[in-house]
Length: 442
Image 1 (spheres, helix red, strand yellow):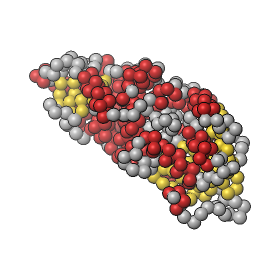
Image 2 (cartoon, helix red, strand yellow):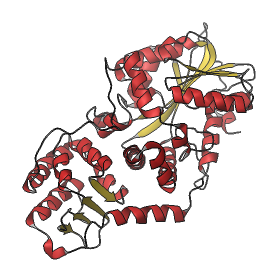
Image 3 (cartoon, rainbow, N blue to C red):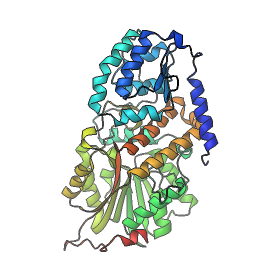
Image 4 (cartoon, rainbow, N blue to C red):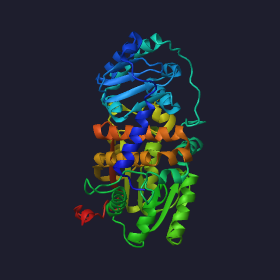
């Protein structure tokens, strides 16, 4: 379903109505509400917002950029239940807190140095205690990951992937493009739609890999199979995709059958460490974030091992600055991408080259991912009732917070995404690549 401005506006009006817990009565504002607003304003580096408490007390601007509503006293307890970011996210997912609109609230949080946020927290906690808050453990929610075993073991990686990707494909279809490509698009113009951007991205990957008819391609972390299907249909390759998500495998098999590609495309339920084939090209789109720093060398060696001499690899993954490394106690780790680890691009390139790959090109697509995420978030809002029906309100809220928050982070540059093209040189040390990139854009 294409997004319309009417759908977005209606969704936002509905969300704003949820914030009107009681009629606004500024004269009921208490010192406790004012103290909490003041403390949070220091953390946010802005005061143009409004706080609404469950009993009618308010504080802050009469013309707010955004409004935060604590819908019950339980919200105060929840905010004191652990690491601030995770505690807020948990309260939002439980429906104890509402924020409308989300983006202007998330922007200062994404932009602020982590140290600033930690320095601001004691004053916020003191204000919450002044509202009668009691620190205590929070319950594990259904939408929260429950992983067992050693981090980044095969079994635990399978559980982590299942948590995020084994939601029904019908849920993802509500906000993804028609090919169900769940990674950054490539926008050839600001006016390009999501379908066009994803088709352009798939084609760009194939061109960077310089795929030729009859060659073989391995897609590590293939999702619903959009790349292997595109490569077979438009470049004449024989393609294998692997993923740890059973839901993705089943959906990909159905899409492959619909297109009559069973003799040229195969998708398997498999771990990247276990594939023993040799291919002309390897792609890995949006999967390296799940590998973990301790296994980055193992992953890079697996890519190298899978390539014939002279073969090409394209690894497309989210990166971030070393000063803002992924927090294992974060909301994202608990609810969105459990055990996900985002590294800086320099560390990743060193790992690829230590494994014997020669890096030939690195391209940042940061602005493209911001645009992709905004379209996903708007489409999710436009299909909100159906999203809640399929996944439940808590899971739908997790995805809404994640998509909008990630879009903000890519816009501000606290997250980035890079496509890295590498080769496995042949025995004579040759890359066998053209002298220019001109053919990518022909």
